[in-house]
Image 1 (cartoon, helix red, strand yellow):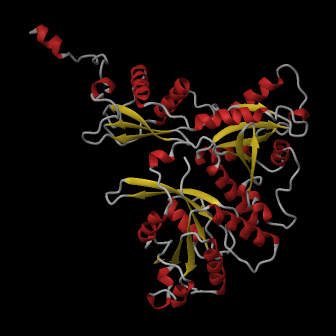
Image 2 (cartoon, rainbow, N blue to C red):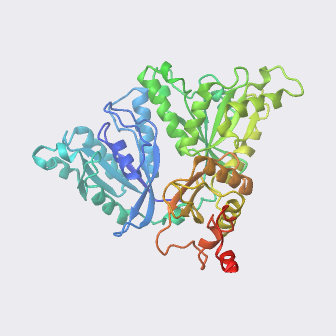
Image 3 (cartoon, rainbow, N blue to C red):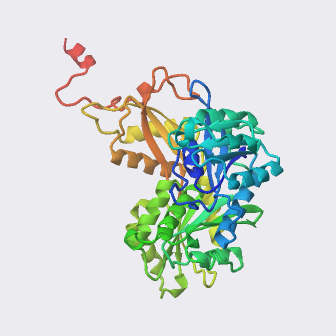
Length: 486
C-alpha cells in the first residue's frame, strides 16, 4: 500500500545517510567522511511508536545525495538532479544542516529552492555535540523554517523530537498492517546481480528493447546502481542494474569497493534478484558469494544462465549443467533456473513470467490456522531434539512479515532449535506452501504468559507438546500400568 513519503535533503556530508540509517534502523545507506558518497536514492521504512512502544504507523523515508548547485560536472549535476526528483515525489522534507559548520551559502541556496516548492519542511540541525556554545548558529533561524530541531544522528539524540514534528505533517497515515498490503499497481522491482562481464548490461538492453549507456565516460561513475522504470504487459517494472562484484582481493579502488556496497543496497530494495551466471565459465566461488549477499538481503533469487548460445549442447547438456549448478549452489535449491542468451534473445522474454511468479511468492501470506496444522503435523512426524536435557514444546506458529516471508514459532524456550531441525521445518514449509525462489526467515520465541495464537480460543499446548504421544522409555511405567499392578 502507498505510504506517505518523507525526503532527507541537504548539502553533502551533513549526516543524511547516518540519520537515514538511524530512522530506518538499518545500514542501507552508505556512511563515510568523504562527501558525495550517496549518489542514488535509498528508500526505507520508518515505524512510529505510541508512548507504550506499540508500533502505530509507518512512512517511507528517502535518502538523497548532497545538493551542490555550483558543481557543473556530470556526476555532481546528476546527483542534484536525482535529489530534486526525490523531493518532488515526497510529501514532507527534512532539511538537514551541519551544526558544527554553521549556516553556509549552500544551505541558503537549498532553503530558497525548498521554499519555492511549497512543501512542509522541518529544519534539522545535526551534530549538536559539535555546535559552538552548545546552540545552533543564529543564521539558521533566518532561513525561515519552523520548527527547527537539534539532534545528533550519530548518537541518537533528538530523534524522538524530530519524529514528533514529522507525524502531524504527514498527509495521510498508514498502520504497520496496512503498510504490508501490496499496492495493486505498484511497480515490481528486480535487479541484475553477478560478476563482471557475465552479461548483465546485455540483458538489460535486451529487456528494455534499446541500447542505453548505464555509466558515463568518466572513471568512477560505476559506483552507482541505475534504475530504469518501464511498462510491460500492463504492469510497471523497475529494473535495477548493478556493477559487477569482483573478489575482495581484487577490489582495491575506493570506487569499486563502493560499487559492491551499492549492489548490496540494490538487492535489499529489489523484490527479485536475478543472479546472472556465465554458461561458458560455469559457476565460480564468487557467484556463490554474491548469491549469499542476495539471501542475506532477503531478496527472492532467480538463476539466469547467460551465453547459452555459446555452449555446445546435446540432449542432456541442460540437465547436466543444472545438476552441477544445484550442487555448487546447494543453498539455492529453491531458486528457479533459466538458460538464456542476451545476444540472440533466446528465452529472455520468459524472464518476466518467472519474475512475476517469484515476486508473488515473496509476498505470500499463510493463514495462522494452516500454519498451526502444518506445525502439528511436522512435530508429529519428527520431533525436535532436547535442549540441555529438556524437550522443547512448540505451541503455535504465526507469520509476522513478508519480503521475505517471516515466521515465528512460540515455544517454552527462547533458544533456537538445532539448525538441522530448523532446516527440516523450512523444507516442509516449501513442500506445503511453495515459496519457490524466495528465502524464508524462521525463528523461535518464548511464549509469553497468557499469550495465545490469533484466532484460536483453546490453547494448543497439549496438541503440540512434542512429548505427547511418545512411547515411555524402557524401564518406566505409566501411571495406568502402575495402578494395574497394584
